[in-house]
Image 1 (cartoon, one colour):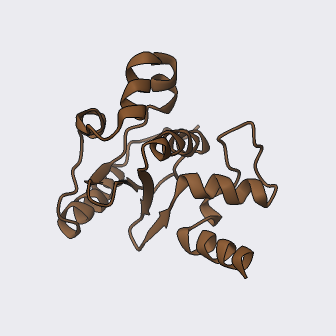
Image 2 (cartoon, helix red, strand yellow; image 1 turned 180 degrees about the horizontal axis):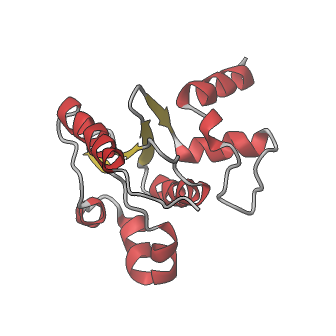
Image 3 (cartoon, helix red, strand yellow; image 1 turned 30 degrees about the horizontal axis):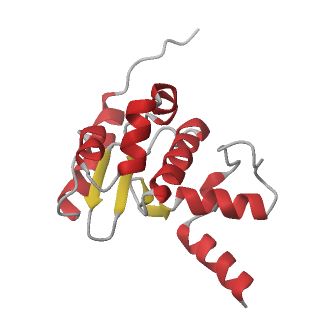
Length: 164
């Protein structure tokens, strides 16, 4: 039986992807995501939930590889480096749930999925809407099957077709 031997290159690749994001996007930080959330005075609803509903806080608690807070645009951008495995359906569901709470404060959450070759953007709240309209997701759950197909480009085209 073969032994699983840790591959140090995996960690190096992950670190390089994150460092590339930090180098490319001014203001992006690795670590301190929830501290940054709690410091935003315009997040009354979200910060109220974090205090009054510890069960909800545990349910939505995810740790991004890096993040950017754009107070002017009222947008949180989370960056996830992927190389040996993708963002789990559970973690994406946590982002969807959190994005809906942010919406109550008129803020948005954007996910940028980064691999060694590209970056793809997703708006988790909008992904959940489109998936429900396409009848691929259950309205009683924040989980979105095959969420990777719902890039911002896909979602924008979907809403464009609805408006036409």
